[in-house]
Image 1: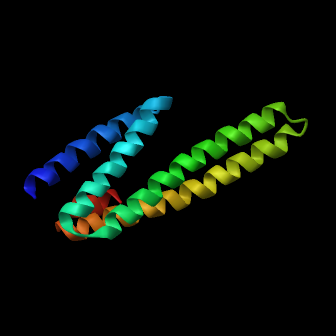
Image 2: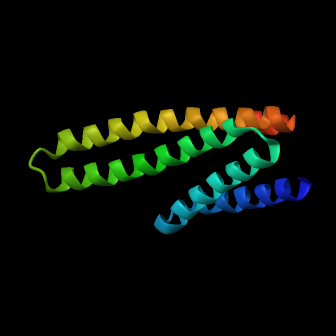
Image 3: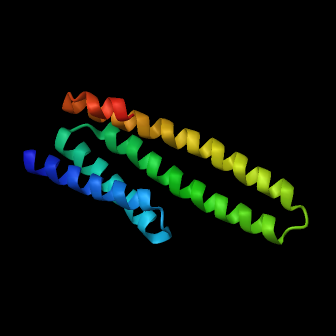
Length: 123
């Protein structure tokens, strides 16, 4: 169990660095690695809510990025570009808030399972 927790920490750390770089393929790979880290923690600690909240975060953040790209593309080719730009920013804002709430829930569950407050503070 200790070895799987160490591996989850390494995978999550590498995923965070790649996600922070935000270069298109590296950011997506980073988010996938963070989700894999949540999965490993969930299995090792026998707490499925860690993975459930973490996977929701990852899926929502990826979908919000795709929605933003789609709506910005529509605003560029549309005659009413201001309307579509406002819609894209509003949808990104709402989806980002929801994804951060899910990330916070995952980190709080992880903090409870590990009995370690740093994950709770990060959340």
